Image 1 (cartoon, rainbow, N blue to C red):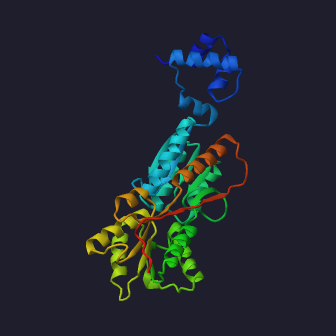
Image 2: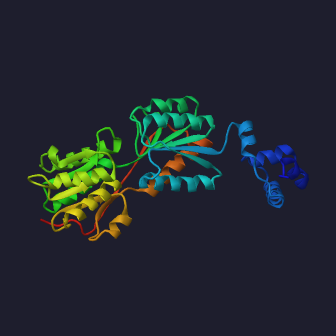
Image 3: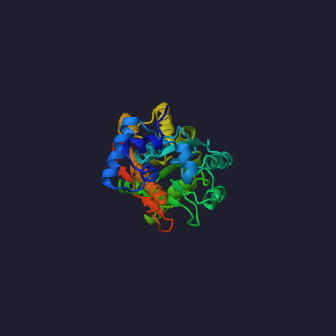
Length: 333
């Protein structure tokens, strides 16, 4: 039979109030803490989270809404977030929304019904209305990778426009002026920012934006594959191509291999997001790298601060810098 709080009070000689206060995260005298911890170990006591949740309106669980569980960026971020929260006694419920805004709203309602204490969200939707149900209940929400206007939620983002500016600047310095880009569609927050940074970097260097060099589509391997073939089929193909996420990079490399296009001899290439891929592909790819570990740690810190009340400041956006890691896939013209 599982041990109870009363078993611990008998073992320690302390009151139920003192034991309960400690088990619920409160401060007690050091000597009492030692007695309780010894009794917990000896009796193999485990907190009944359901009962504690009913008593405190806290369940020690946090929900996670992500567009695709098999997305390497999302899975890397959430794995690190889970590690940090687990160390603070929180469990997580992860919901894969399959990139469907309707499903995202349904999964949010599922998490609220489970009485989660907070919610992390890598949004699929362009409309934040579904999150108002969490905000109205006082459930803190931390957005990752994307944000909404209005400042109602904390957000942790990479500097998407800055990533594009650094990639294009590196290509221009090496003599490239006809630079292609494979990116997501205008309905994607990150894709819009990365495309805007690309356009800004070209124009600031006196290079006109040419629509035929910008292949927009899904953030997918298929788009990387098809988009690369379209760029290379142009009457005047680009001398360099900037690939703006991991899946697009993977698809583009497959297309180059099929076509027998060599990089950097025939085409200079800068990829995105995965240093492992950069090291596997030969010649080694230049790569824009997002600070995924730092983004996860920032998101977790903000959430924990909202949950324990130590973070009382207005909601804000944390924008973290990317890095451009040099490889062997860019040549100087």
